[in-house]
Amino acid sequence: MDKVVATAGEAVADVPDGASLAVGGFGLSGVPNVLIQALYERGTTGLSVVSNNCGAMESGLAVLLAAGRIARVTGSYIGANKEFARQYLSGELELELIPQGTLAERLRAGGAGIPAFYTPAGVGTQVAEGGLPWRYDGEGGVALASPPKEVREFDGVEYVMERGIRTDFALVRAAKGDRHGNLVFNKSSRNFNPLAAMAGRVTIAEVEQLVEPGEIDPDAVHLPGVFVQRVVALPPEQAADKRIEQRTVSS
Image 1: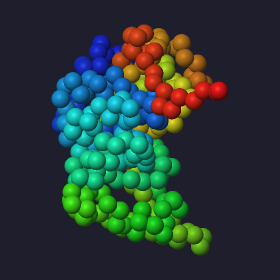
Image 2 (image 1 turned 45 degrees about the horizontal axis):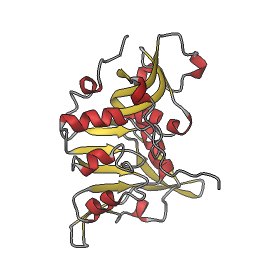
Image 3 (image 1 turned 135 degrees about the vertical axis):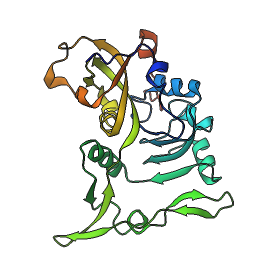
Image 4 (image 1 turned 60 degrees about the vertical axis):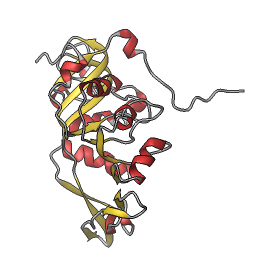
């Protein structure tokens, strides 16, 4: 039951080229930077990433993106990441852009063993009808477009079918975790980390504070250890390394 692994490098050592990854985090909150850096140092490439966004300010997944290690992204926000936009428009990167709530539910559904579900989000748009550019040809044309999805009517309302997401691995960051893999997340980092963790067949969690089993009140557990296979305890300096994407101060 002791799932603690000595180092981040050891924790990601079996992630192969071409693997699919669900990665937690929201903006710069709760991003598993240490595990991402370990993947970068290992040289893993050709990755298919599922994440709300793909890093920012040369942090998080932006490290792998800038090195050309990511082949495909499933996400809901690409924001002001200029390198992401460059790779996407030049045809170097494939992108499946989906509504944020749909992404969250696809991850949760996959982790819960639900193969598909129906949602009204995207009905009447290219999300349902197909034609969203997944990959450009580098000359302004679309090399690969999204296919149409099944649409059904329930009680007079149209819904589009979305598939649950399962990935080979998941990388997440938690504020606290025990040796059994039970995790607690802090504020905004709780948005996507638990969902990403559920979706991974092998989930690796870096934790800012490692405690012994029983020290976390069961009612306070945000993600049960059944979803987590490996835990990496961060030293204090890594646990304290948190960046602010848009710093706002009063005059």
